[in-house]
Structures are given as structure tokens and as C-alpha cells.
Image (cartoon, rainbow over all chains, first blue to last red; front, side, top):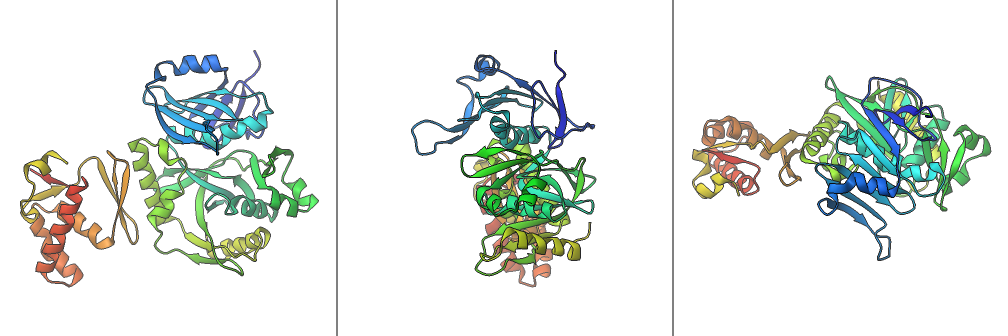
Length: 320
Length: 102
């Protein structure tokens, strides 16, 4: 029997019976998530009693009659996720076991569902809070960037890394409260770069991002980029918002809007009550203990220039 | 609607005790208090004054005991505070965010 694949990401100790490109190596005293490859029949058997009983908590259709993505929840068995072209995954209700049913495509491609949805959901079920955010490590602390999809989080993270920051996570930030402080756990070793930003990168910059894993459609390139290992304190949070022409403005938010923080949480609709309570608690802790800044994006400023200013802002004004 | 609401629909809430039910969590932010109703999964926003009113009212044996402190804190008459407090608590009771403590 082959050795299992082992690593850590999103605050989980991951053991899998298949290869996972980009899974950071490392071990630690972290909750286990066991990943097993399965076929549709095995998944159907495991889902068994939930069939007909589970609740569909999310369904997406992209302009067709057929369902393109869904999440079903069952209080006893857990969650079943499906995404067309990416396969299915069954996550046990405690997040400790994931059955993955991939389509016949390259592993990095179907594992985008695993990395982007399933493991973050497992992390949430294992007791962590999860935000939609990219992050880098600067001087021992985590600087996170939150913003709506397409606002430029990943591009900013790419340029912060190219300018010397250490990669921490792309798109999924796992938080944990420890002794009244919020600590962040590093994410997965893949960064997604929009094609427009990728085309603007010079060759050496692209090389510095690590191996090119592939491209999804025409929209994104995926690079293998190893994150730092181990948890770090959350040092600052930057909230991206649409701005006007000119350069972006960066301003301290003295009284963060709770709605804005709550809205940055990952996957709202799968949360049982105790997790909503934890989310609210973590958002209140964030607002009270972490410096938060609003970045009103300027239409004339590219991600590289904004990353330079943001780095200066961190160095000048935010202490670890 | 809770049992208490059904039993005592329109008694003056100032003469009663109120409690935050177990299925409701209040958390304070700098300029807002957020209440989470775990039964419905709904978040509710209260301005800081309303948040403070709930905090003091829930601590008092009878809601009316919170009125002088609130009047002093906000520099308005006790009559005005009593009226606002009653209106606020009625609306929170209707939303299941506060219960009358029988």
C-alpha cells in the first residue's frame, strides 16, 4: 500500500490516499482531515441515509437548466458538494473525513474544488473561522486582504510576494482565537492569478511565483507557491472597496461595520447556529483587536503600485 | 412568538424583568451592537444607544430601574428614556431577541 500524502493547510493535518500538488509539507498538533479517493458508487453508499432527507442549502445554475453546483447538508452524515467539471466531495459532519470523487482531469484542476471549498468547509467544521481573504506574512505577522470576488485580492497578494513579503494564503484565511488573540493558519500552496495580471507580469516575476500548474479557461493561471509554515498572529486587515479615478486611498477604520466583517466570512449558508455564534464572536474580536484599514481602490493604479504603497503602510503604521 | 409574549402581550414592559434568551447572542462593536438569533440564523443591528439600553435593562430586576442611569448617561429626561426603552424592548420582544422573565 503506498504511503499516504501528508501535509498541513488551513489549520488541518491532512492525510490523503492520493497526490495533492501544492499541499504544504509539515506536521503539527492540528486536527486531522483524512482525504480518500472514491467513486460515485462509494460516495452514494456513504451518503446513503441522507438521500431524500438532506437539505439543499445552495444551488447554482450558470444559464442552463442543469444544476452546475450544489451543497446538500444532512445533520447526521455531513455535507455533499458537487461542481460540474470538478467532481463531488462528501465531508463528514465533523470535517474529519472527506470522500473525493474527481472527474477524469488533471489533479490540480479538480482539486480546485477541494482547496477552494471542501477543505475550508472542513476547517470550519473542525472549529476554525474562515474568511474570504488573501494574506502575506510581514515581520512575523499576517497582513490580510479582504474584498469581493474580482476586486484584486490575489493580484495584490502576488505583488506583495514579488516585493518581498512571504506568501501566506490565497482567497481562504483560517483564523483561530487563542488567549484573546486571533491567529491565522497558512493556506494552500497555490496562488490563482487572473489572466490580465498574468500578462502584465515580467518573465522573472512569473518564474518567482513557482511552477505554472495550469490555466482554468481563459480567466486564471495557477502557480505552485509555498506558504510559510505555522500559525502567525493576525497583524492587520485591509478591506478593498471600489473607489474613484486616481490612486487608491488607505484609511484606518476606527469603527468597523460588523456587516462588512460578517460578509467577509466564507460560505455563509452552511453554518449551523453554533458556527454563526463563533463567526460573530470572531468578527467582534477582529474589530476590537486588529487594526483594520479601508482601501478605496483607484482606477489608475495597478496592483504592483498599490502593493508597494500597502507595504510602506504596513511598515510605517502597523506594528506586529 | 415566545410563551411569555403570548401570556403577557401588552403589559407595560417597564414593570417587568427582561432577559436575553439563550438562543440570542449580543456582541458589541464600536458603533453598533449586533444581535444574532440562533433559531433563525438572523443578524440584527442595534445602534450603540439601543445596545446600551438592552444591556442595562437585562441587568435590572425590573426594567424601570434602568431608566435613571440611562437618563443620566444620555442627558435626557427619564420620561423620554422610559418611552424609548419601552418601544425598543417591545420591538425586540416581537423579534424574539428579548424575553419577558416571568
